[in-house]
Image 1 (cartoon, rainbow, N blue to C red):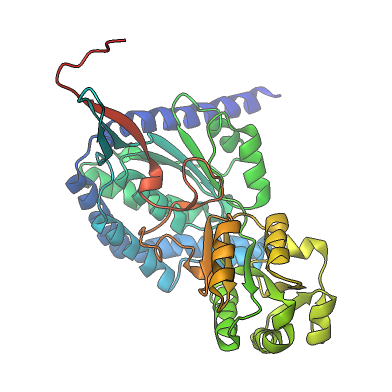
Image 2 (image 1 turned 120 degrees about the horizontal axis):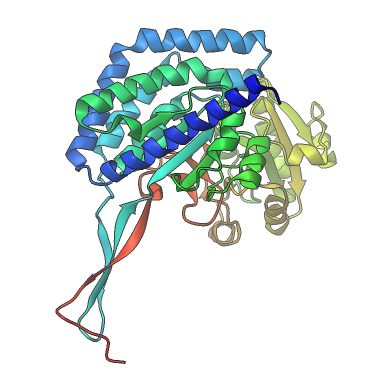
Length: 428
């Protein structure tokens, strides 16, 4: 390694280390901020983003231009784009989070021990949360808002494809924080596209309490393998709908279409459709015809291809794929048992839905499928923090420890035991 490379590496190491140290110091202050101060910041940040819309979208346009020049996949380009309603939704999310109850300091499960000692659990911030994510610059705003409202500091490391957008958004958020009395360093951002910064960030276990990776399988595996910090995974969204034997045909068409084509470059989009053999000839033709007319490529099993001749053969890889595109894997299965077995083998613990008129089938699905969101007669699109009443979300955890499913404010807190006594001492 040359002297110049050594200096560059040392400089990057110092940059990341200083970022983490400042975030740790800021987290001690954010943990003690009042709800009013945090909400003032959220509302000021929303106003500032509206005022800075043109500047932020110009930065986003530069990112999009580079993405097209580099041949970034179309689904990732769609995730990168902030224009249109997505910008308004991002700003609205700040105001919605401001309106949510502050979880910090909440005491629950209060009980009295035989000696009169009262024992409860109080919600407290996690500390410093590191978010490593790809493509979606709106995550910069959502993650910062949720982390700070829950009393944490956050370090943001977005993908290189969104660097200008993320820096522009972070600048607005940090300026609003300073004006509202929130530590600027509670919103930290890694200012470089150098991939070595991720490796350095994952070693900051003295200052960072939790890492949340959001991106493709390669990123998730890398972070899980190399992090010295606990990791809460946001894995792929291989989501299923199972059309049970009693499924209503019109409902099936509506739910499958909404789940698949409403917005395809999202982790709660439908990727595999399963159908009970007993409903295959009654329900599947209308569903597949509607998908085909919407431009969706059908990749199906042999029985699917008998029913719908335009379908292409599906491979084993198709059933485990997160397409994020106009492609859907389809399989006809003998019964509910086989559908559950398929989800267990190929699913990613994200979102799985049954369409059925049978109470028994619905209850069996809810009990036996252990994904982070399990539904009956609804779209997979409801696996979303906003739609579930959480405000914006930090991500959808597919790890079962600490938090599972869409993570809002409560998922960004922990709990400590609090004791209220009147002089009690142990007598054993």
